[in-house]
Image (cartoon, rainbow, N blue to C red; front, side, top):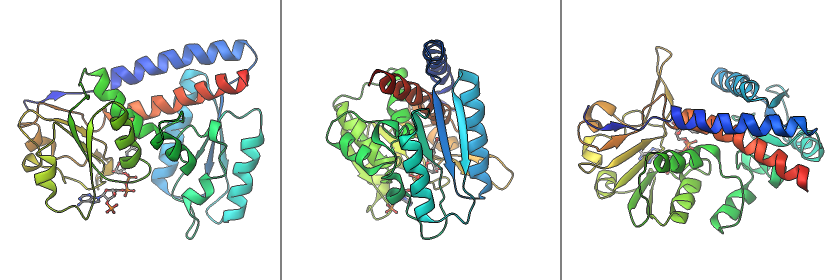
Length: 284
Ligand code: NAP
């Protein structure tokens, strides 16, 4: 592999260390930063993710309340729980874990997450504010894309960035954050004609499709920077991205690894957002 490896681990460690210092300061002043995670699924990968968030909060001195409503939870129950947490002065950040029970719409539910506690940018109003250039918490993964590029000194102003994926969790908010950094952004999706032609014309490719090996050497220009957001479980219990690292690594100039790239920065930013929310709510 000739591409530089854009690790997320050092950046994640730096964000966590700043977050721990701020959490300690707030706790000493009587506000113990607290993140509530609402779960309504028995999905094993979701349970794994919730455990990893709980461990990460503990490391930085944030309290984590997991509210498990069970996989039979109804939309009204989930909404009532989010309303109650939004009104609870002890809680500063709220995450609604997906998947939700069949027929329950995540965005409809997330409307009940109070905007200034919406630390993973799940409420559609947060995305609207982000699009309008107003302050809001961005979904942590989308922000991680921009932060990892900035950390490694990738200049975004005037560069052409192709984002592959248009979900409200990653692709769309990432596109807005990149536009804010003055990048020229093309958003691709499953109906894009000739994906390789679009992505290989870009200086930076952000792969967020959830498709193993979607981005090959044919999809990138020589020397391009590639951010792999994909986290796809493999049969042997491993994790791979959307980028065929073996071929892309021989052609691109730089590539984020999976694991160890966007993932750790995402978790660190969730923690940072929770402490920022606690600090802002304390001042309010
Ligand atoms: P999603 O909601 O399934 O969205 C996938 C997007 O990719 C859709 O917009 C889809 O297009 C597009 N797409 C699918 N196949 C495509 C193809 N062949 N060519 C072009 N576009 C294609 O997924 P998501 O929630 O955004 O997540 C994307 C990936 O990021 C997943 O692997 C997920 O596990 C990972 N992720 C990682 C983190 C992290 O912390 N590292 C956090 C969140 C998500 P349409 O809109 O046309 O269907």
